[in-house]
Amino acid sequence: MPTLTEHARNELAALTEAGRMRQLRGSTVEGGYVIRNGKKLLNFAGNDYLGLSQHPSVRAAADTMAGATSSRLVLGEHSHYALLEKDLAAYHGQEAALVFSSGYTANLGVISALLEPADLILSDKLAHASMLDGARLSGAVLKRFRHNDLAHAEALLKEHRRTHRRCLLMTEAIFSMDGDAAPLSELAALAMRYDAWLLVDAAHALEPLPIVPDLLLGTLSKSFASLGGYVAASRPVIDLLIATARPLIFSTALPPGVVAAAHAALQVAKAEPERGARAWALARRLAAHLNLPMPAAAILPIPVGGNAEALRLAQALEERGFSVAAIRPPTVPPGTARLRVSINALHSESQIDALAEAIHAEQAALKDAR
Ligand SMILES: *Cc1c(COP(=O)(O)O)cnc(C)c1O
Image (tube, rainbow, N blue to C red; front, side, top):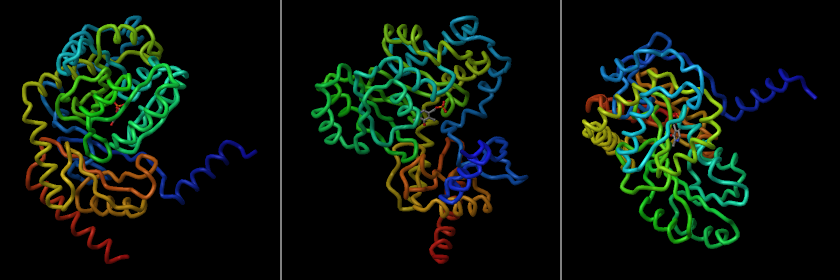
């Protein structure tokens, strides 16, 4: 057996060979810009869709980052939690909500608390890693249907539903790496017809959903410019989760300033719904420039294919002053590496146009190099 350090070196070499190496790179976000290696880049990589991370009321609310020092069930239950949860529930048309330390742990906690090995989970193939990890942790049988393919979802329900006790159907409202929307009403009807519960992760949605699913998952870390995740559902479901969701019970509460900042961001989002509409309009503007399908929200994927090419394109854009994320497997399926442009309400039309021009030029250069 190799030593652990040798094992790590071997694995790193294999990841590098496959173009799957990941490294942490220091960045400072300042206003709409990212400072990296002393260079100021226009930020098209963060998920601050509503531009609220710079809002004065959000910044003022984050007055103390002192830690909560215990779980919510011990001493961590600061009064900001109740205010935030009441407003999150109302925002989504649900009875109650429950905040976790992140969207990732919200999905882990909710899915693993409600489903067991005798149960069935049906998931869209492109659903976020945190949903899949929650499904794995629950021990339930997991089947994945082709992306947004209702007929395939129904075929799997027909085949497997009867032999399982409970069933959860799960999807994202807006897909994080593709920017398209799920057919929510149709999925809700399917869940009803096959006696399944519906979970919708709305992390990238710019506004409340057109349906009220059994479980609405969300994050406070993107549009709400803070940190944390939440589930909104009926009161009894939330009470059950408080008593049984392990990431809530066995992890320390968020610092009060973090919860207050999310609450302040939610107030601005509700008072200024035009922010989401503007981010979406800018994303459509960029899509039109690049001849790409219209996105359903503020995320625009630019298909590339190869891992190395995606990295090279992102690097070239960085040299031109734009920070855009290169997304590679396993975040997306093999062979579908892409650039992922994230747009926010504070971008200007001319910044969008400049980005489109830079992408055009670099795509042409890449083609010439082939
Ligand atoms: C980002 C994301 C999460 C995780 O949320 P965090 O608060 O960042 O942990 C969960 N689901 C989806 C769809 C996401 O995009």
